[in-house]
Image 1 (cartoon, rainbow, N blue to C red):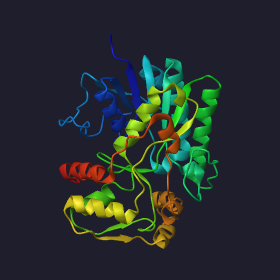
Image 2 (cartoon, rainbow, N blue to C red):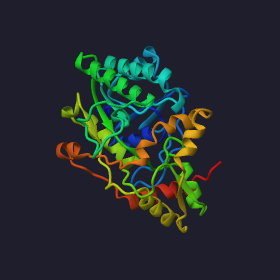
Image 3 (cartoon, rainbow, N blue to C red):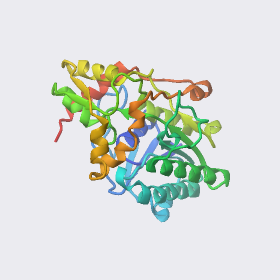
Image 4 (cartoon, one colour):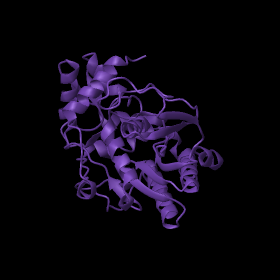
Length: 327
């Protein structure tokens, strides 16, 4: 019997992490991007050789997530659809809602479950651990957009248009995550070269991070469980470190003496009016200037929690960056 089809919108680091989990389970995977291409492949857990698409288990299709006709076509025959697509940071307002609507349409037309990857921007500033029952209280542009997208998805679920669930995660890092995360090339390449890394916010405050493969594993778990539908879930993460602790691990695995500092917030705020991407980062400074602790207790009670220790996760990430030098 032919293996069920899983469709992934987005072929960057997170989409690839979901793909690796599914391929290891023997699932057929169709990855969808506007170009019909996938970024440089990374290793599947424990298998050694890189997974290269197209392969028997992995098809890469051209599709426009914002075009309902296109999403209906690429989702045809899918059992589960994973929404890992995101527009550039500076284009959320105009591009994200059509992408959300398009993927909802495609998954709904196929009768597939829809698993949507989300951040925690909609919560805004919080005191204490972040949990799924927090209100959408963000005052930032991206936070309000994220809340709008969540509402759109849950309304589609309630109306019966699609069967959907949400997997939320904090800041991530991992193999292949070079430009789509704060802890990407701006951290790992300097660390490998023994150069100083200056981070947003405070070095000694707790800040939860998730390893990209744990992010992918959590999303796949949600796609497997009927009881996950209609709810938001915080995906399991390793214990919360400080930025200093995580950076120290990165430098140690890179074989370099730790050299780190804090980028003054005034620099972000001063450049924000003139540099669009800095403006987008500046409105999220609160996440780095206060304790940022993410609770996955609800997920663990329901499904268990399988997480990668930061030491192992950092080792695998450093290895990827070492084998993929900065161009």
